[in-house]
Structure formats: C-alpha cells, structure tokens
Length: 300
Image 1 (tube, helix red, strand yellow):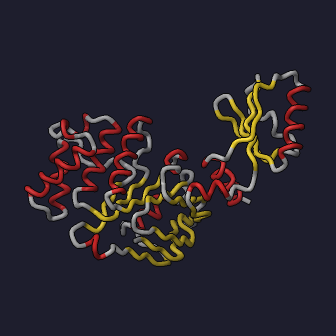
Image 2: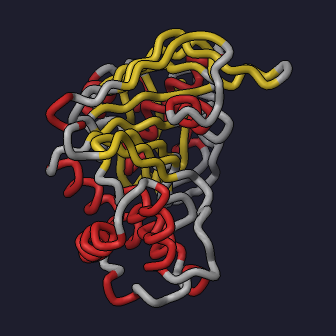
Image 3: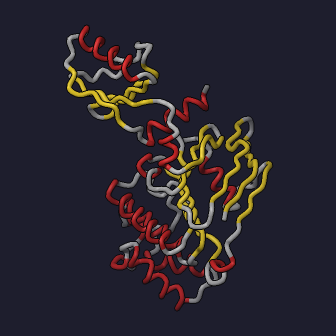
C-alpha cells in the first residue's frame, strides 16, 4: 500500500527525515510515534505529495479491487484547516466538489459519515462553534468524503480531550474493519497500543517497526514498580543497579537488568532515609517504557 525507500528530506542544516524505509501493508493501522521534531509530519507530507523528498522513493499502490470504486487516499493534516465561517455541511460540500463529486453523492455520503462521527445533528453549525473534538471529526468527515482506500492522519487527536480521543479511535477501528488502511501519527503512547503495527521515529530516523506486542517483548530490561512514602523523582538515580527511573503519578518505574540486586539496593536506600516502602513488584513494560529506551539508544 505504502512503500518508501531511503527517503530523505533536509531543511538547511537540519535533516528532518533521514533514510527512512517504510512499508505499510493493506489493512494495517500503522502508527508513527515519536517526540515532537522526530520527523513524523515531514514524512507524512512527503507520502501525501505535499513536500518533495531530496532523495529516496515513494510507492503508493492501491489494490485493484479497492481502487475500482474508491478514491485514492484521504488526508487529515495536523492543524485544523477547514473554514470556520462555513457550516459543517458547507465545508463537506466544498471538499466533495474538489473531488469532483456531484451534490447528490456528497449529500448521501455526508449523511452516512456524519452518522458514524456523531455530527449528524450539527450539519448547520458553523465550524468555529464546534468543540475541539468535533472539529477533528469534521476534518475526518471531509477526508472520508471520497471514500478513500487509504487514510492518512497527522496527529489527529493532539490537544483533544480523552473522551473525544476514545470516540475518534472507535471510528478509526470501524473504518479499518470495513477495509480501510490507516497511517496515523500520534504523540500518545496509549494510541500506539491501538495500532496493528508501530514505527518509532526519532531525530528523523525510523528506529524500530513492530507490533506493539513484539516491541514490548523485545524490551531488553526489567521494570520494577515501586511505591513509597516519597515523591523525590531522583531518589534511585544514583544506584549502579538502576539504569533509569521514571515517575508516574505516585509510582516509580525503575529500569534494571538484575532484579534481585536492584531490589536489595532500592530497599537499602529507602531504609537509610527512613522512607516506608508501600509496594514493590515487577511489571511488564509499557509502550512508554519501550519508547524511552528506543530514544536513549538513538541518542547514544
């Protein structure tokens, strides 16, 4: 469906995308994940033909059985770019006409998609008056009006409240079950868990591509979850048995290689400082743990 080979893009001295080879298969929900400035948006814009690569190749192929009655692909940019002084239906009609669709086809398709996105009762509302989550759903509706076989989304839920994010992903899953291939970039690790395959980008490079399950299985360390009567973020950082420490809410994720030695060092540290241990257990790595490790490998 999408295949890139050694794709590069530079902006002056900055290499935004550095020799990225990517393969998104038909039927995938492929997530591009990484920190701000990793190169996700530049890569997506090159795939969509909005930016010309400096080198490398892009091959977009829609299977014949999918391309016969559907548009090529739909694109939803990172920034809301619809017209605030037009109604929901006027925005959809405008974008439908850009695809050469008739008014009747636009109306029929719009009603179908607005039902899916729960915007059917807001057809006459101005885009500027919609909430952040509803604006994203409107942008998705416009991207879907051509019935694309491939949907490309650039951080579609950034800055949207958690409940709206959840509803948005339910829509994506429904579209994927109906046969749509989806390429989506996201800064959220919980959304990475929802993808069939994930590519981690950092400093313009594609560091790893695997299923979320396989990425976690390949994690080279062990995670100890520690809860104690302290919230000092760097309390375990000095221990030679500890590789890294991250603080989540009221618990520490302590990255180690040798569980027994690390537990002994942690208990000794807490005891010396008169801090009560509330719980200590080994837990499986989260996607956030995986990507922190991948980012550190890229830096080294």
